[in-house]
Length: 232
Ligand SMILES: NC(=O)c1ccc[n+]([C@@H]2O[C@H](COP(=O)([O-])OP(=O)(O)OC[C@H]3O[C@@H](n4cnc5c(N)ncnc54)[C@H](OP(=O)(O)O)[C@@H]3O)[C@@H](O)[C@H]2O)c1
Image 1 (cartoon, rainbow, N blue to C red):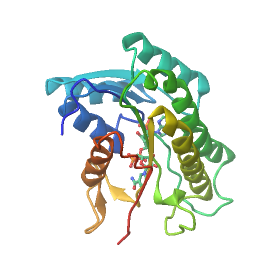
Image 2: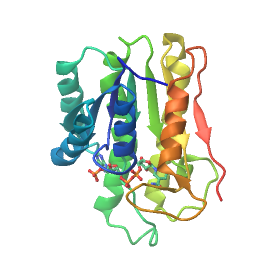
Image 3: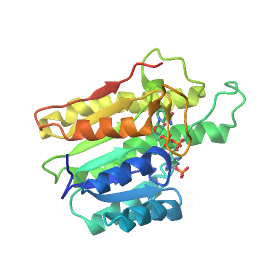
């Protein structure tokens, strides 16, 4: 499977899963537009991609800040008229530690970036996606966004943010279907990023990367809207 000529935007690409996905897309021929809260981390990811002979551009984007999201989309639009794949990956995690233990600011940040940030990023990139003949919007939700899920140690606010992402992708998938734009939400359980080696039997980031690549490389009559995983 190749992504030559495909323009892919990945948020939260400075580390973890976003970084792995950006590197993999670029290695398969995509031109990657990678953002992170700190420009240096996005630039580091893009440097690794370019060192391997592939194409990538670095941007700053704080998903908790509407202006930052708008600036990011405008900066990408200055470099390309079309985006083929938007990956809403960036989202802060918050450990439970008791519902009332978290600071108000932590709760605000988790919901703002995870829920509102995903919606705003999608809204601001939609005009670029609409110019593509093969548009996909991929959101890395979480098992915490699955109705009835309760196995994660995440804070209630993280569950709320991920449930918002799941609800958003569900309705957006239906509403963009007539335009031929596919909207996919993935609901993985805890998985092991390559920079945090792992629990035996746990889902690996590499397998999740493969799952995303599989979904977006399906023929255009195949609209996969949700992917769920069985936990160990
Ligand atoms: N790892 C898991 O077990 C797991 C399970 C299910 C779902 N997920 C989801 O998968 C995605 C990636 O997970 P991960 O393991 O790579 O997560 P992670 O290690 O917790 O990293 C979170 C990512 O989101 C970014 N981020 C956090 N707050 C942000 C903000 N305000 N604006 C922009 N970016 C922000 C971080 O960037 P900075 O470098 O700027 O902090 C980082 O790239 C997330 O959506 C996560 O919720 C992860």
